[in-house]
Image 1 (tube, rainbow over the protein chains, first blue to last red):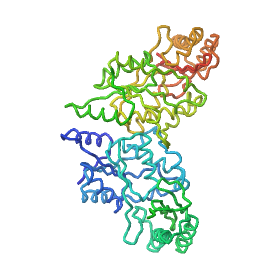
Image 2: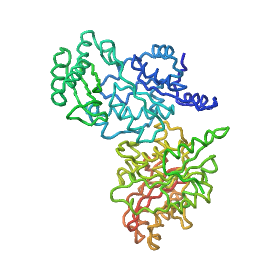
Image 3: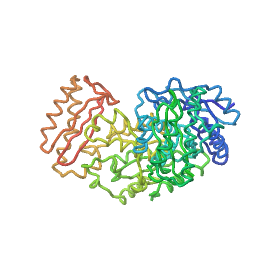
Image 4: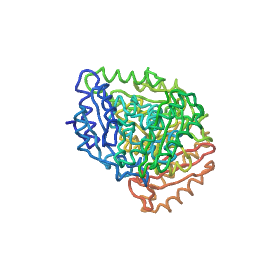
Length: 284
Length: 284
C-alpha cells in the first residue's frame, strides 16, 4: 500500500527523510489529481513512475476551482478505490489533505495567469483557473517535485500551469501526457460517471467531430470558420447535446487561428444533459 | 568578494552544488533588497549570517512594484558599493538579475494577497504589493532559502509576505528584523538620499511623532482618534511636510484599533517635498 499522508508537515518530513537517506539525489514526480482515478490518471502515474525514484499522487477535490453553481458537491470521491489503484501501479506516496490543511483560516493569497486564464474555459468558468494555479502552486511547494505530470485533456490548464511555472521560476519540469480515451473515443474524465447510457452516445459527438474536422483538414479545408460550422452542425445532430460553449481553433499556445495547420489545437466544451464536457484535438 | 550571479540557472546550480557538497544539510538565508544598502539592510544580513551556513543577498530594483508616477527611474543604484558592503559583512552570494531574467517575454503571472494588500499603502500605491509578492515569491523559488529576512520598517510588506508564505505553504521561515534608525531617529531607507538637509529635518517629524504618541499613551491616552489628532497637529508644524497620506493605529496584524494598547502598531506615510516616507512604531 502507498503511504497515505493527510498533513503537509508529515508529508514534507517523509520526503525530506527520503532525500537525505540515499547517496545520490532522489527525483520526485508529482501527479496532482482530484481523485476518482481513471485510465488518464494512470497514464500520468505510469509516466512518473518511469521517470522518477519517488512518485507522489495528490488527491484533493479543490473547492476554489469550482464555481458556485458547479458540481463540487457531487464530484465523485472514493479514496479507498484510489488507494487500491495507486497500490497496483506501485505509487510510493498518496497525499490526500483536508480542506483545513490546504486552506487554513484567513487564507487570502491568489495566483493568477493573466490572459490565458480569461479565454475559452475562463469565459465560462470565471475564477476556475485562479483556483487551479493556486492549488497547483501549493502542491508544488509541499512536494518540491522535480517533475509535474499533467494531462493534455485539460489543455488550457496545462498551458496555464506551464506559464505559471516559467513565470514564477519554479524549479520543476512540467511533463504533458497525451489524452487517454475510452475504446469508443470518449476522453477519460472523472465526470463521465455522470453520463447515462443515452447521454454517453451524445458525448461521443465531440470525439467524432474531431475525426470529421481532421478528415476535412486532410482534404484541404483549412478555414477555421468553415470547420467550426461543419463541426457544430455535426454535433447538433446528437439529440442530448444541450449547449455548445465553444468550438475553438488555436495554435499550440492557445492563440486563435483563422487558417488551421498541423500542430494546431481544436478545443470543444459542451453540455450533455447536466454534464459539461471538455476535450481537444491536436491537428495532424 | 561574494560570488555575483546574474542568471537564475547559474545561481541555482551553484546553490545545488553547495547543498550536495557537505555531509549535513546546508541552511540558506535570503535577504531580498533593492540595493543601495544601508544599515537596515546590514542588520538583515548580519541576522542571516548568524543563522545560516550560506547567505544570499538579492539586489534587484523590481519595476512591477513601482507605480507609473513613482521613482523607479531615479531610485538609487550602485552595485559596486553594494558588493563592497556585502564583502565586508561576509556575504556568500549576491544575486543581481537583469529585468530580462526576472520578467521574460510573455510574463503574465501575478501573486496577490487579498485584503492586506488593499489597505494603508495599498490605497496609495495600487498594484505595489502585487509587485512585491510576485517578486519575493520568484526569489524564494530561485534560492529555495530556509529563512527569509525582512525589515519591520516596511511593516505591511512584512505582514503580507508572511501571509503569502503561510497561504502558499512555502517551506521558508520569515524572520522579521527590527527597524534600524539613523542616530537622529530617522528610519534607514534608500530613499533618504533624496532628502535635502532642510527636508531631513521635516522628515524627522515622523519619528518624533511616534515618541509623542508613546508619551501620551504612557500618560493613559489610548484613544486612537485623539492620538491621531495630536500626531497630525505635531507633524503639520514641520514646514516641509507636504502631505500626510495616513496615520493609522492597528493591531500587529494590521486590523484597525480604536483603543491603542501595547503591541499595537502606529503607521505613518507622508511626503516631504517630493519624497514619500513610511515608518511605523510598536506601541510599548
